[in-house]
Image (cartoon, rainbow, N blue to C red; front, side, top):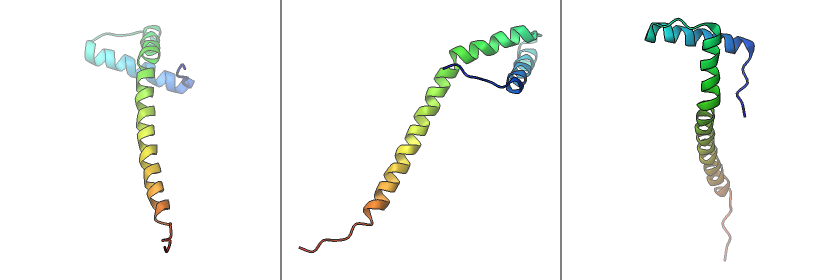
Length: 81
């Protein structure tokens, strides 16, 4: 899965990459060079970040399911023997 960005998102990220390199490294990157950096991050790092987000969502859903299950069990009626 390749991260798809809108034109506006891509332009904003390219600007942010250029600002970062300028402030942190004193380097002026062209739009092309900044897009290459963005492509690197999208291809190399985005899948890792995505997988972390999926694991976080899984954990939240499991907690919610457990809570719902407990609530459902409170609806049970006692059976007389």
